[in-house]
Image 1 (cartoon, rainbow, N blue to C red):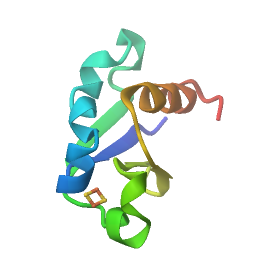
Image 2 (image 1 turned 90 degrees about the horizontal axis):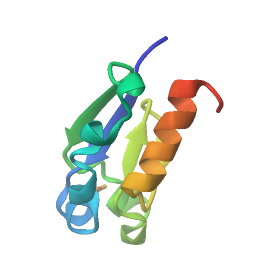
Image 3 (image 1 turned 180 degrees about the vertical axis):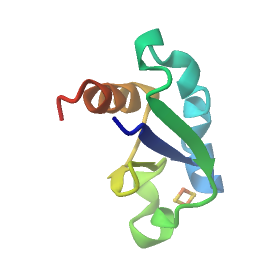
Image 4 (image 1 turned 90 degrees about the vertical axis):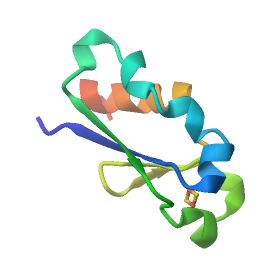
Length: 87
Ligand code: FES
């Protein structure tokens, strides 16, 4: 299985609106998910301009799925669905 790729936007808007809380998301992964998830911090994904600022913070999952108003809880839930293969 390919790793779940998680790109957390660390542009100014996303960072200030909550991305900072997700920077340590890898530390919050259950042990059995470790090694199955790749987390990267990215510069502005340009969604704050193309979509809207109210959607920040943004996270991109597996290169195409966009999570708006991301929180550590939402992100962990989605990662879990993908790792467990239920969605
Ligand atoms: S700062 Fe996150 S999309 Fe622009």
